[in-house]
Amino acid sequence: MGDADVMHLKSPSTQFTRYSTTLTMTLDELIVRLRRREAIDGIMIIGSMARDELTPASDYDLVIVASDMAALIDMGHTIVDGRQTDLSFLAVQELNDMVGSNRPVNPYTADGSTFLRMGDGHIEKDESGCLGRARRKVLNGVELELLNDHQKYDRWWFMNMFLRIAGRLDRSDDPIYIQAVDMYVNGILDYLMVDYFTSTSVNYCGKERRTPFATGLPMTQVSCICS
Image 1 (cartoon, rainbow, N blue to C red):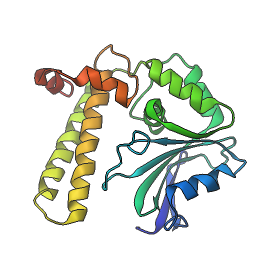
Image 2: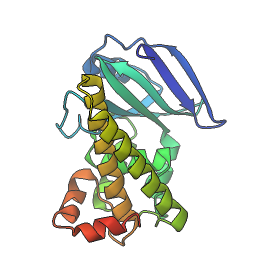
Image 3: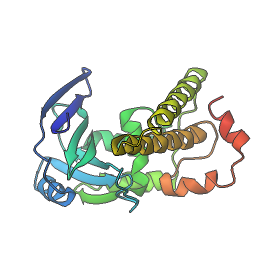
Image 4: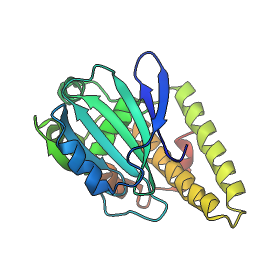
């Protein structure tokens, strides 16, 4: 799958694979190519690249906002410049609805998770201004849906599974396995932080601005997030 694109459709739940045409492209080349597409209203880089925290193990994360999304693509996975690249797709109307809504955001859906990561995203194109409005809303603080008992157990189960997998991979000297450990551990930390905000009345305000809430947080309180 190293030289293939994988796309997930929103409905029905389907995925398809095709040969990757971005395998030898740089991220800058891909963005220039995407900017030329009239059907693409907005492009945002999110994740470690947007925060200047890119490491050899990091992937690229892109949000692509389409003015009209007939296929209703949810997510895509490809390779850009030798790095795993995750593509999150939203229609302009979808994003505008999320910005204009006063309802709590569900961070465990694909659209909700993407929306919450826009707080520290870097905008590359924004024809209608919807990405800028989304980023400002997240930075101003977004109320998240509270975890119910089933979701708490679900998060606890997944984080423990990730920890066990990371522990086993960490025994290897294979650089691919070591890279996987880095990705698993970062995923666990992200889960912990999002779960903290969904278990309290503190509004989520982006990855960088949420960090002070974790500083000095008693480990007993962190443990209670998924207990």
